[in-house]
Image 1 (cartoon, rainbow, N blue to C red):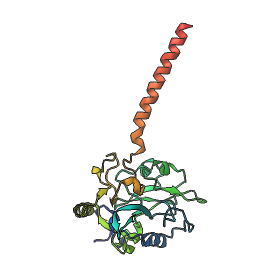
Image 2 (cartoon, one colour; image 1 turned 90 degrees about the vertical axis):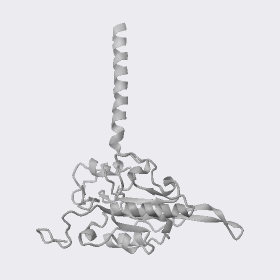
Image 3 (cartoon, helix red, strand yellow; image 1 turned 180 degrees about the vertical axis):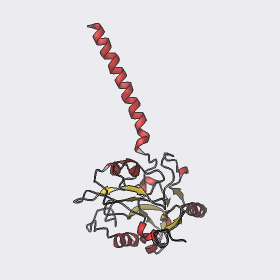
Image 4 (spheres, rainbow, N blue to C red; image 1 turned 120 degrees about the vertical axis):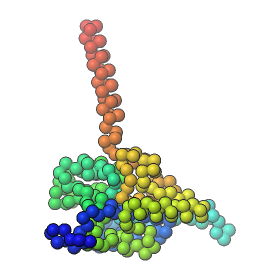
Length: 272
């Protein structure tokens, strides 16, 4: 790697797109990723009370929860020692760093930008707290912090990437459930893993590619997942869409309504 003119160590002239894929089949729910994320990024505490959702105390992603480990309990179909058991689905969720990012598109101040690694980062010194990015995200990832008002989310540990280090969450994962690297390489690795899991009789699939059946305008995700059940069980939308894809149908319906009202008004005036 050669340094740039400013002399920054580890600078890449043409870096590949980097990201995650999370293999939920080997997640053990240890929450090491949550802790590492908070520790490295100085993310504040976000809840120590019981949520009533199994061992899930953070419930979902938010301004102070950049990594969230979901615990899903399901009755197991297998029988253990003559009694039905429980199957645990565990998954570490994170910002998807979409190929086409709605949060980036709707930001009026330029607070969000795409890095040289393909990730999307919020610049807190520019964010004005308008919240457009919050409503624009099809995954419900980005959020504003109470008492602050600005938007926060995963940065893919941008500072670590600039120093040639992998993100803190991936570094801390003891089972390699969170795998970091070149997106193109990860997709092939995920495809091989899905094939292996299916050969063992598991209903595995790769969520986060253009082929997953979602609105193609989103493109692939910078953070994808190998899932063992319907995406909704993991609080992931089956068909996420960008807000702007719903603009034309809305304009069309309003135009039809306006034409109808205009015609009705003209008819009433004619009768008078």
